[in-house]
Amino acid sequence: MKKKRSNMVLISMVLTAAYLIYSIVYWGKASSAGAESAEQVGAGLAMMLVFPHLLLTVFGFIFNLLAYFMRHRGFTLVSAIIYAVAILVFMPYFMFLMIQMILMFVAFAKLKPRLEVKPPVDSVESA
Image (cartoon, rainbow, N blue to C red):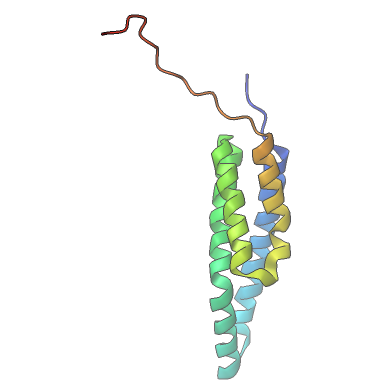
């Protein structure tokens, strides 16, 4: 019997993909828009501040994909933690990842852990 995929992980994945597309378009236009050197310096500084946040968001998205397609509970938790760290790295953009982070933590709590195969126990103990 196949395990059902989590809808919360799927929603989080779609929202993160939309946010990453928005960020790439926005920061791509912002970095190439200025003709003056002062505008280019300002855009470069802004991109330097936002880049760690975006990089962590990409890593969180990768773990989100792994959690959804591999149906692995651990990847769900890792993705939620990475989203939380991405929020802490650049607080002004917290609203873009807050829903994804909450969905991933709730999905982690609802997903059942995988059953691990235990090695057989010897019936005869050696003295």
